[in-house]
Length: 305
Length: 309
Image 1 (tube, rainbow over the protein chains, first blue to last red):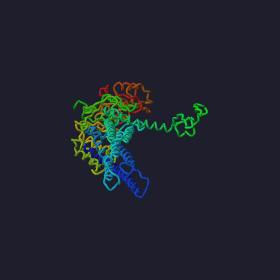
Image 2: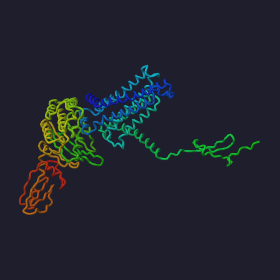
Image 3: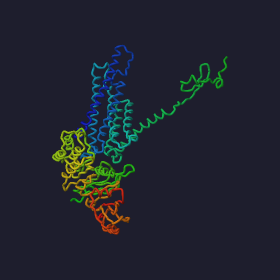
C-alpha cells in the first residue's frame, strides 16, 4: 500500500504545488486589501467597514477560501481517478494482489494528504500572519479562524465528490455530476451553521456519505451493479442530495422564465378627517391606486354639533 | 495434466444496454495449454477477458478462474494471474526501472532476472521514460511486467495489436519461450492467425457474441475443409450439402469450403459426377475466414466429438 501512496503522491504533487501557490496568492491579495483598509483609514478615508478589519473574518476571505477549497478538492479527487480511467490503465492498477479497499485507501490517503498540504499550508501561514502582533491592527482570537477552517474542511467533502464524479459510469447530463451537487448542499448548509460544531457535523456526514459512495463505486469499477450494500446506500443518498440542487436550479430557472406577479390585497384605512380609503398592498402602489369610499357612503361621519 | 480447468465459464453473459456483448459463453481452458481466443472486432473477446478478471460484472452466468469465482477474485489469486492489456498502457511519467520497481513490490514471486531479460530482449534502456517509448517497446515492457511475477495463468488481450511484424514476432516468442512450462497456461486473444497457428493448442471462436467453436487447433483445421471439384464443362447446380460454408464457381471448377467434412459430404459431392475431387489443405487463417465469413451457412464446432460426427 505504501508503494501506491508514494506513486499517488508523486503523480499529483505538482497539482498540490500549483494549488498551494494559487491559494497563497489569493490569501495574500486578501491580506493586502485589509492592509489597504488601514492605510486608507490613516489617510482619513471614510469608507471604514468593520467586517473587513479582521482579514480572517472578512467576506472576501471566507468566500475565496470556500470557493478555492471546493474547486481544489474536487479537481484533485477527479484527477486522481480520471488519470487512470483509461480501460487498460485501470486494469493495470486494479489487477494486482491488493484488495480494492486498500487501493482506494492508498489513493485517499495520498489525495487527502495533498489537499491538506496544498490548501492547508497557505491558510496556516495566513492565520499565523494575522495572529502575530504587528501585522494587523485588530485583535486576534482563535475562534476567528473557525469560519475559514470550516470551509477548508469542506474541501474534503468536495474531494470525495470529485472522485465519485470521475468514477461513475453515468452520463454527465444524467446522474454523474450529482455528487458535486451533494457537496454543494453540504457547503451551503455549513455556511449557514451558526456554530462550528454544527458545521463540523455537516462536513462529517457529507464526507461519510460521499466517501462511502466513492469507495463503493471504486469497488465496482464505477458501475452501480456489484457495489457493496453500504456503497449503494451512500450513492443513493448522495444522488438524492445532488438532486435537490437540480430541483433548486430548475425552480430558479422557472421563476426567471415565468412572469412574476406579486400577490396583492387591499385593506380599508380611515384618516383623521373621517375619510375611508381602500388601500392596496404592497404600499409602493398606494399613491396610484388608493380610492376614496366616501361617496359610496360605506361609513358615514356622525353629524357635527 | 490436472483435470480441473484453469478457466471455466457457465452461461457467461454480458449486455450493454439491450445489446449483447457476450451471450451464454461456456468455456473450459485446460491447465498447461496455450489457448487462443479468436473472433472479429467487437465479437466480445475483451469483454469476456474483463469479466474473467473481475473488471466487469456479468449480466448473467459466471465462472471460475484458478478455482475462484470470477466475481470475487481473492488477492492471492490475482498474484497468480498475469494480465497484459491490448493497448499496453502504463504511467507515462515513470521510467522502465521505476515501472519494474513499482510492480515488484506487489508480487512476492517477482523474478528480476525475467524482467531484465524481457526488457533486454526489446533493447529498452532502464532510464527511458514510458511516454517516450514506441508502441512495440511499451508492449515489451508490459510483457516484462506481466511475466516477471511468474504467473500460473497468463491472460493476454490481443498483445500484438498495432505492432509491426518484427515486434509482433518478438513478443510472441518471448511470451512462449518464457512461459512454456507444463504447469503454466496461456489464454490469449489475437488477430494474428499465423502466430496463433504456431503456438496455440486450443482455439475458441466468438462470433457476434456467441461461441461458435471451442476445440483443439487441429480439430478445427480438420473440420473446415476445402474441396476442389473439376468438371468437363460448366459445373452443375449445387444440391443441399450439409456444412457448406462457401462455394466459388469458376470455369469448369467448383471450390467448396465445408465444415464437418465426412463420408456423407463426399458421397453428396460425388453424385455431381466431377472429373476430379480434391481436398485442398487450408491454413488456419483461411479456415477462420471461411468459418466466420458472411457467405454460406454457419455451423458450430464446440467439441471434438461433435466434429467427428
